[in-house]
Image (cartoon, rainbow, N blue to C red; front, side):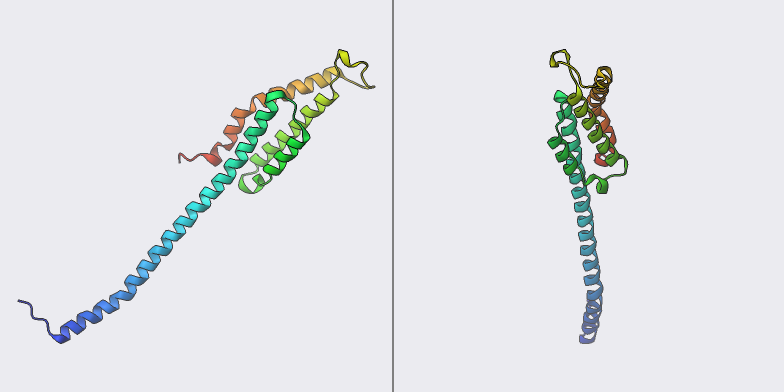
Length: 162
């Protein structure tokens, strides 16, 4: 039979009191670490959502241009505005790709504007029909290939399988 005296009970109480501070400290440390991990995951999710939104804008623009090959400036300016954040969320290749989409859409718009067919009467001085047709054709071909290209370019930034 174990006999507990007042002095041994007092000693045990002092030991428990001494252990209380480290236990509280470790618990606080664990809670802080969990909050840090939660904030890190939230940051990654927020960044992913912002990147996904830009990818969706790119796909939407590519689809819009490919639908009728008649990009309009209001739509192009909205695209530029909607994707402006890309410079801060991606490596240099994505903003460069977005810029290329914009420039090629402008080139296609210009070719469409300059184009004259047989029913429009006389062409303006210096009109080069074949150059304009070739420019429009080149841009149309480029846009039709871009949905796969865009997916490949964005894949490393949006891949959640890792």
